[in-house]
Image (cartoon, rainbow, N blue to C red; front, side):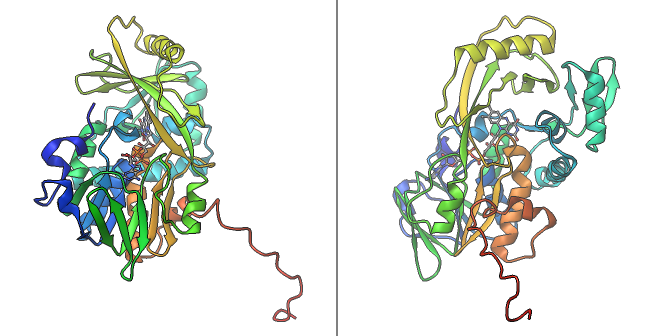
Length: 372
Ligand SMILES: Cc1cc2nc3c(=O)[nH]c(=O)nc-3n(C[C@H](O)[C@H](O)[C@H](O)COP(=O)(O)OP(=O)(O)OC[C@H]3O[C@@H](n4cnc5c(N)ncnc54)[C@H](O)[C@@H]3O)c2cc1C
């Protein structure tokens, strides 16, 4: 599987045809990382009229490996979310129709189905969390959960007019009079603002303390998913331990969550378990070969991404755990608003990138001179 960034002419935009041509490029904004978060921010900023450069080595990343579910209902259910978290995921997914239309991303609106145990309990919980659902025998159908095709969506975002692609890894940042310079293999890229969207990877060198501390709150959760060249289903099927998802030319079987695992590895025992779960969901044996892939998700302690400014013209778009595709448009809006200095939208506070890493406030004196 190839990341769209690695695909020849697509790799470098605006007439540039080799990495050396990058030397001393300047842009309004540089984004480091071309996963769903980096590219969603890039596309949003480009749509608002900014010149954006995206730096990425172009290898497969978590966003490409993902199943592409936009699943506020079943993610809330499986994560035992409270009503507030469910409302946030619902608000994030509600941005998808407009975002998809703006950037030419097709949404498969075939509703997802629960085919696991306890349909009564599942239906009751979904309704309590504010989701629409339909019961048909033992199956619970949720129209709120839809899907996009990750490879196609990344390609759409990458090809956005106004986005210049720079292949390679950003190794360091340096402060300049105008903002920041980002070191890439082809030269320095200068910009007024930088967005760090580096997934579960380490931070580039040269970041101020606030950004380093925020990066320090991100942990790695590895996961594997299997590809079968057979149309096992025409809709997303979910159960407590896995899912089967229709995907271009076949189906995906997923997925594992291996906490604090920074390496993308495929585990044979997990593969067997996921196949068993998938067979239960589709009600038949899977007698075709399964090609396994693995990737690493970044995650924060509360499972929500870090999105917004950390000072000095630096912004984060990081660590959406297992909901990077779901959260992409919301993160893009929050980060773009911050860069433009617009008022924060209501959901922005929940994604504040400094919410875990700010030093504890000094205890207030009980009777300060001003209060006396
Ligand atoms: C098996 C699996 C299934 C999933 N299914 C779903 C799903 O159905 N729905 C959903 O919403 N989410 C899903 N997820 C989660 C989703 O994939 C992640 O939340 C999301 O991809 C994270 O996006 P990202 O942009 O933060 O990181 P990534 O996709 O990892 O992208 C980060 C990018 O930054 C680049 N980078 C890192 N360091 C540097 C540097 N120094 N210089 C330049 N570039 C750099 C990397 O090369 C990479 O391309 C799934 C994840 C897995 C593993």
